[in-house]
Image (tube, rainbow over all chains, first blue to last red; front, side, top):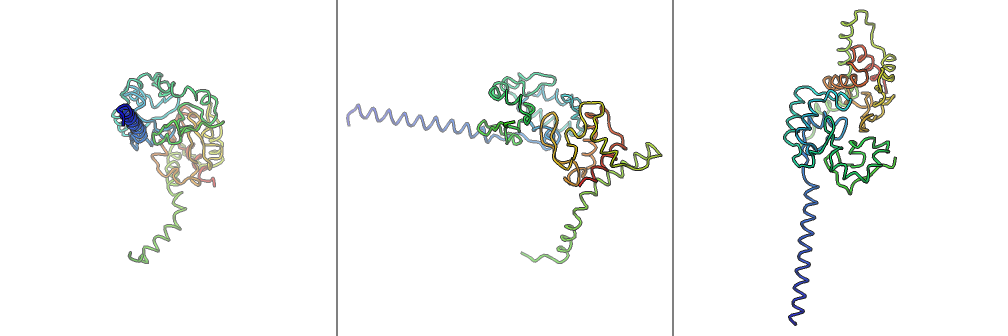
Length: 165
Length: 138
């Protein structure tokens, strides 16, 4: 075996090895994203999940959740008030599991809406028209209309099904 | 495995026979509470009316929504939240035994939804009329 050939084989082995490692890392990350447990609380699911998906608490910062909890009697024009015990439990749950990334702090509105966050607008740019015009979707907050496992906190892009009407 | 005792078998069978009525026991208890409250509010109270309840349920009360907007005019079928589009299970206990099975939960939803539709809480008479109509739906 000439030194040149040995060199080529070595290069090839390093190449394939790098590919395998990189692929493994990517797949691991994707799996971790899919398997990451979503914070859950039965009072939160019952009270908030009755009218809309129980949004993962990590999608808004703690300040925004506190603003939500303080205005439930006029929740975007709807009475979503809860009793004192439920308010305490849900408030503590949201505080403990609120988002800490800078991205979630870009939500605006009174109180802040998840759907105004920079990342949300970017991720939904392609679907914005369908969301606006579909009678089934009605609202960008109706996650479950296109994300079948939204109730379980899963928003994988590959599972998205936008309704035709 | 041990064979089932005759007592157990009889109890199990009895519970099967009794179950369909159980779906209505809780709503009727709730209704009795509304009746006492309605009588106290107006001594001339002459009983709840399913027809009055049906009308109350269908008409808007000066606002954008009626009860039927989200619960459908025939609430033995599933409805849809007018704002978010989320599915709402049937409201009539005959179609959904979980409805009005828990008094605290029923009161909570009456409070929220009456505020949304009427801009105030409902009276015992209004709640009793609507519940009487809902129980009558098959």
